[in-house]
Figure: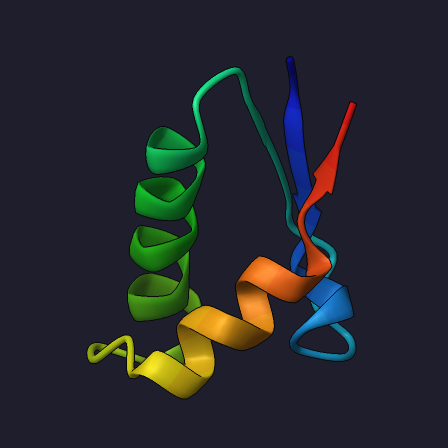
Length: 58
């Protein structure tokens, strides 16, 4: 199973995309990207929920 996320679905204008066979690995990559590129260093429950809602599984 693949998990995919387009950052632009959460942060309009961002072209970064992520794909992983493991949801935890995907979330880790997204968190690293959020810190490095968007200055988001704390993943609040609201941010996590927004990201989770945009992950495509297939």
